[in-house]
Image 1 (cartoon, rainbow, N blue to C red):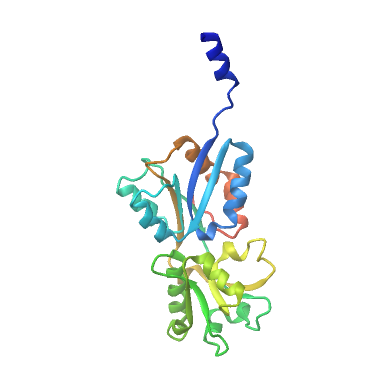
Image 2 (cartoon, rainbow, N blue to C red):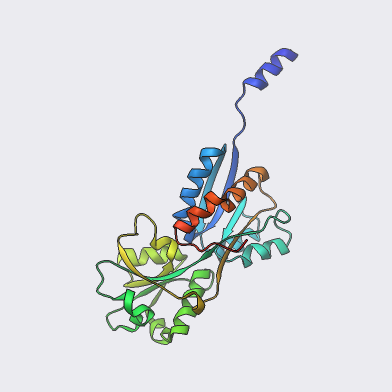
Length: 250
């Protein structure tokens, strides 16, 4: 019986790790590439839900079933850590987000040369941004418009996406004439050659320092740490840079 038990244990396949990720919507394209490369070297299955960082934060206060939180605002994971809801000292900063004004290639708007001033154009009926109530990119968009002196004229035209990915979808679909969105989405393979963009100076909006954390109730902490490590590795950081993120100082 002992011999049979040992043989059964040796023949059984090794257990695969599992990580459930709550990720900011601006990671929609980049994180897919990161997970593909991570999965080639690790026996870990990664599932991702994308959304607004503020909404995820509210859910995680009630211990929503995720293992890792990747936020567009490092303040959210830091606040979870302060509340004792994370694995101790697992907080990290992985990227700095960048903001662009984007319009489809078919648009007559000269976004590249006029920048945010183009938003005062009478031909624009709708401008897409993420909801500033719970999306860091939405707050940054409002700050950038205020700094450019166009917010008062643009505000009645704003259409709010639940997150930055939905704001981009509004512009893609024609529901909005232009949008203030994440550089990482504008550089996604399915959009890189389908629009024109103006990079909004980083000095005109709060720094989009993006951070993550491992949640206290993570099912597989070792797998979560492995994903965190890859995200911060040279390979992970190179992918983020390719999608237009700036890299944090180490």
